Amino acid sequence: MEILVASGIGVLTMVGLYLVLSRHSFPVIIGTTFLSYAVNLFLFAMGRLSIDKAPIITKGVTDYTDPLPQALVLTAIVISFGMTALVVVLALRGFLETGTERLENGEAHRRARARKAERR
Image 1 (cartoon, rainbow, N blue to C red):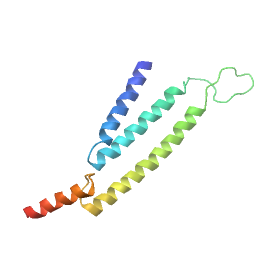
Image 2 (cartoon, rainbow, N blue to C red; image 1 turned 180 degrees about the vertical axis):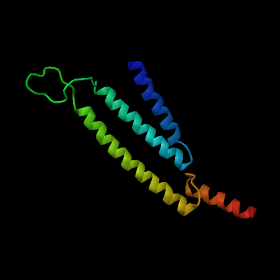
Image 3 (cartoon, helix red, strand yellow; image 1 turned 60 degrees about the vertical axis):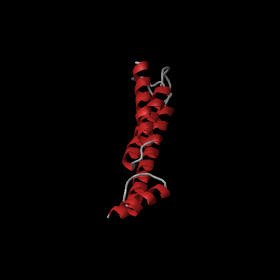
Image 4 (cartoon, rainbow, N blue to C red; image 1 turned 45 degrees about the vertical axis):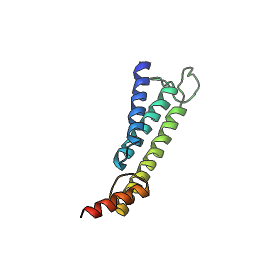
């Protein structure tokens, strides 16, 4: 089971990094989402979650689970949602200002637009 979880985290991380290094804005957004999923799975795996155990120490309960990983994952979900919303707004603003969704530096974009204007 550990091999399956570790390889799942690895695959999500690889796919996320590959998409983040893309030159288009939509794959970057999807890549950050995959990376946040990988981080959430990593936090769950490091928390050694157990089934049917109490998350709070009470009298008479000797076997309990650690509630900290669950709190960390809930916090990570909220942060990743906010980060995704910010990246979507930035990508939309970049598209509206430049007319393209490619992520390039300014000089390369100006040259490409100049070549496109010369062809017309």
